[in-house]
Length: 234
Image (cartoon, rainbow, N blue to C red; front, side, top):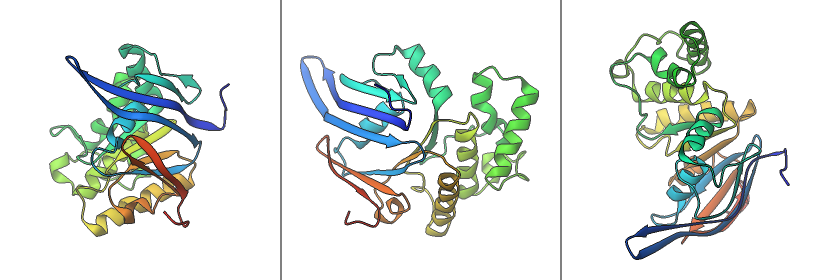
């Protein structure tokens, strides 16, 4: 039965990749709940399965077996088109490399998910301008990425991720390309978003960055080996 307090419900999630006759198991049975409004960091060494897990949570891939309920929708068995629709409606993505369109200004970059959702141009412009204002870039709407600092580009990416009011914000190494001062600024923005009720799941290899979250989930060899509130022994 679905729990309305949960943004994400994973039950015995397993993922095996096949290459010809060879099978490579990566996730060995992940069971995890994320309550609406939680701020969770996912950590683990290379090969631990964290990237695979984030791809599954982000509906970029589907599990080999197990149940994944996202914002009340069982997405475990959806086809590619349905997964794409769910991604657009319920998820926002922030990447290490920003992933902005180089020759497109900040407003149009932020509005891109609305374009794919079929929102009229006038409404897209209004909502994109408001989103940029929310991340402190209200005066940079007509700047292209090359005219913005790394921190400003990441703020544009965050505004884009939030434009559809997603159920979950997924951040993959969001400070990986930023210096320490800019990283602190971006983490302060994530704190503000969390305080406003956003559900955030962040992958990071950086212990200091992870401790901005309120909960740290650690993976090793495709299993959850620790799941603790920040402030406890992690």
